[in-house]
Length: 67
Image 1 (tube, rainbow, N blue to C red):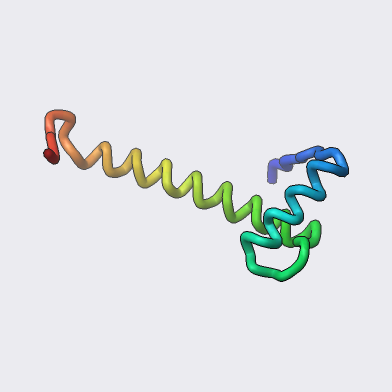
Image 2: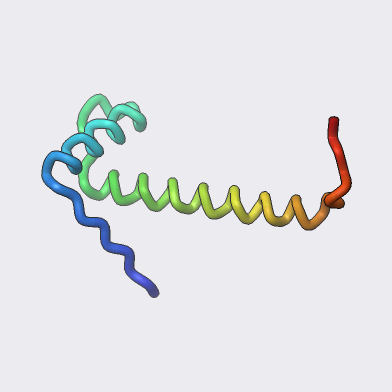
C-alpha cells in the first residue's frame, strides 16, 4: 500500500489541530490521530466527488444544455 507523508511545522500542526477540533465540534484541539482520520476522510470525499463528476459527464451528452 502506498504511503503519504505530510510534514508540518509545530505552528502549522497547532493551527490545524485547533481548526479540525472546531470543525468536529470536539470542544478541544484534535489529536494527531483525529487529524489523520480527518485528512483521510477529506481525501476520500474529494476522490469520490471527482469520480462521480466523470461518471456523470460520461452519461450526459456533450450537447446537453440544462438551461
